[in-house]
Structures are given as structure tokens and as C-alpha cells.
Image 1 (cartoon, one colour):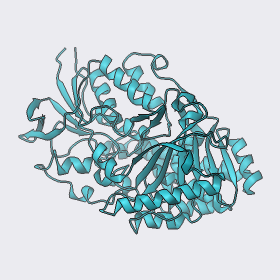
Image 2 (spheres, rainbow, N blue to C red):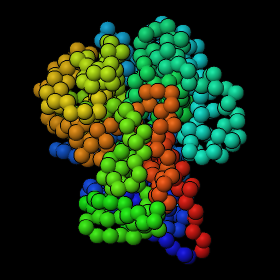
Image 3 (spheres, rainbow, N blue to C red):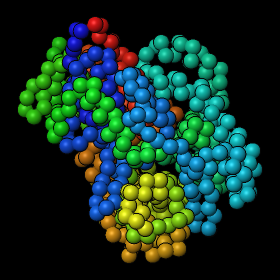
Image 4 (cartoon, helix red, strand yellow):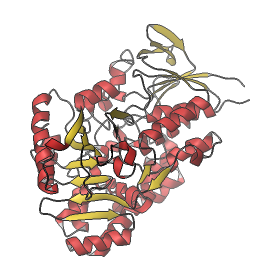
Length: 492
């Protein structure tokens, strides 16, 4: 085989997937990672008998993980196991209303009608609309490059042009949901899906109503060994394919000669390669390892997505009313997003997300205890006084939990770790600690993401949540797939 060398910068989930795809194509792959571990945001924390998935907590489109094993000629079920959730999320409001979102859509629709008085058919209609958007946009926006003419002249595009009025491009998510539902609580519930890519439902286009299709019509899942097992299983697969990892090895520069990427400098040494794949956040990559190259200023200057404030709490009590995924809603959702995106601060009554994997995986917490990944959406880092904001937010989070769950939580916290936008930027090189790169708060946002290749530097490619098609596990994995389609398979 005429083997060539590929260097991947960063071992986030997209970087690992890129390494696997290139190895399958016959390349020798070297991965350079600044941290001492793989996975980027998809890592874990262990402390005093508790285990926490540190980053993404929702698992959809598991076939994107399975496909990588199949490409390598392996049976995914022998290496990665997961289960479908019967309840995708449990929602709580201050007035005592609670609903469970069942995987069975009819059961969910009936629950909404019984508890919130919303006609069951409204749920079915909304999810039918979401399925329609997915059918016509996913082949274009999720599975192909938006930066190639063939995408827009191909059969998938031609099928969609006549449906453009039904795809939500000309209204916001909130406007669309207010037309779909009578009860403001249902509007709020479906507006929440804007947060899945760090956006504002009062600004982002209704095309993002594509997201509920993934969770409801296709399904939400949980890896039986925890979310971190996505990283570990794919990391092991890549190692089995001969991928070599250099940890604690921060890339200092992509070497470009005569308009072509020919390697990297890392740890003061030069490493040559036939092609380079950047999995580092696109903005910080151009500021650091590509600072000598032509800068895509328009893309770099786009507003960034929201970030997160996460408390990892070991709770010495079991709360039977909690499921794997739980949402304690703000009473004024619009004000919450105004604070995040317009005021750059944290609202006094934030929506609180609690993820407790010990519900599905009991050994993630000691007996009789729970591991709480407790998160609120916050602005990205713009130099705010985070110590002050975090102290105030922690009080407000505890007060909200105490009110809704009728408890006194502080004495029950025996383990605590914290992640804020500053630490997110340090640990994952995400510009301003934004979780999803550029925000999607306008109808053209999909077109304002960096392509999966460089238009000015030959043999330089991009993958990860900060480039096309976007953030989150499924889209990050798809970014590696789109990227690898530009790279030819080596012949024997």
C-alpha cells in the first residue's frame, strides 16, 4: 500500500472519528492532543465514589457511532452497548406542574392533554412538522458540505426547493411554536431545543424545530457504561486501527509551504504529514496555530453560542421523582435568554438541567446517593466577573431546586466540582468558552460556519463542533464524515 501520513489536531469526538475514517482509508494517523486524555468535552470526572459524564449528556443518532465500527469491519454491539430511553425527560414548573416526556409519542401526547390541557393532536402535528423539516433539510445540512456547488444542484436540494415555505426559514422558533401550541408551557418545552446548539429560541429560525425529531421520532438513548464510553470505545477502535496518539502535545503551528499544509510544530519539534485535519475550535485555531495564514474574518467575527455553568454534585440522597434527564423551568424564559444573549449575564431565575446517570447506571454513585450534573445556560466569556456571577447563580440554583423538589439541598452535597466558561475555554480551546462555536441566532447561521476544508490551503481540513454542520455529538461525528469524503482512499 502507498501509505501516507495524516495528522489530526485534537482528540475531541470528531477528531477521533476523523482518525478512524482516515485509518480505514489507508492512512497512518498521528493525533496530537494538548490534554492528557482523549475526548475533549466528552470526558468524565471521578471523585469519592461518584462518576460524572463531564460534557454532553444526551445521546441521539447512535448509528453515527455504530457506523465507525462497521467501517472498520467490526460488530458495534461487541464494543459499544446502549439502551433506548422510555422517558426522554422529566419537566418541572414552579406552579407544581410536572410532565414526563415518554418515548411513546401517543403516551406523551395523552400526558400533555391530561396534565396541561393541550390537545394531543397538537403534539402529533408538531412532531410531524419536525419530521418534515428533517426529511428535507438533514440530507443537505447534516450530511453534505454546504460549500460545494454539487450540494445545491443535487437531487436532495431539488426536492427541497419547492418546500422552502414549510421549513421554518422565515420565522423564529418561538413564533412557530406559539402557532403550534395553546399552552405556554408547551411552547417553552419546544423552545428549549434551541439550547441544543446554544441558541436563543426568540431569535433562531424555526428550522431548528428539526431537533425534536431526533429525540422524539427517532429516540433518545443512554450508553450502558455512560456517555464517556462513546469516547473510550471509539478511542480503542482507533488504536486497534493503528492510530497513534501524542498526549500533552500542544500543536504550536500548522506548517504551510507553497500553499499546502505539510505538517505541524508540536513540543518544539517538526512533524511532517501529507495532510492535516484540525479538530481544534476554528476561531482559536486561526488565532494560534494558523495565525500566519489568511484569516476568514467574517466567520471569526460571528457572535458565539452560549456557554454553560455546571456543578457536579454528589448527593447523599435519592430523589425518586428524578429521571436521567430533568428540567426545572424558569418562569420567564424570554428574560432568561435576554440576559444570556443581550446582557451577557445570568438571569436570577435560570432554567436548571439535572442529569443523573446513576438512575440508569447505579454504580455511578454510592448506594442511596445520586450523581447530579447540574447545569444552567450562561453567556460565553466576555470578561465578566465570573466569580461573582457563579456565587450568585449557585444560590439561585439551590433555591430553585429547593422550591420545586421541596428539599434543602445544601446539606446533601458531599462532593462538588464545577465547570464554567473560563475553564471550558482552557480545557477544550473553545473560543470564549462557547459550547457550539458560532451561534445560530439568524437564518443564515448555517452558511456562516467554516467549511470542512480550507479554501486557501491545500491538504488542510476541519472537523468538530465549531465547523459545519455544527455542535453536539451527532453533528460533530458527521463533520468528520463530510471531511473524510474529500480525502481519497489510498489504493493497495
